[in-house]
Image (cartoon, rainbow, N blue to C red; front, side):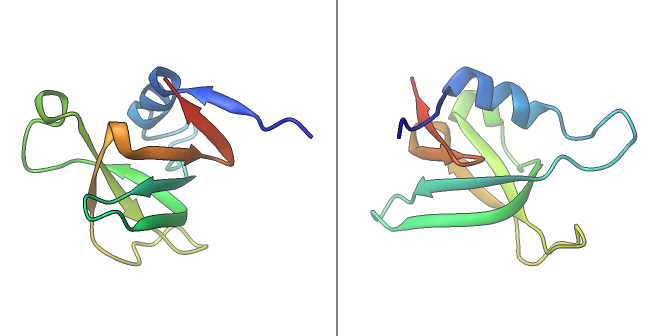
Length: 93
């Protein structure tokens, strides 16, 4: 069984698309490593803004949501180099 991969630049493009043409939020799953080395898996999340320049700091905001699309926690800043898996696909450079 071959593991599917996705390039990081395509992940970033998908994170920029916050809504579908019908106006619904784009929901995705994400696995990443925190600064302290903890592995975090968010099964359902949407892209969210941060209070600082995301591009300059190479960060993206991720908001966990429940099955109905309602926020279930707070916005988490994630460094783009920390992405491990996106929608079940391994993230590569």
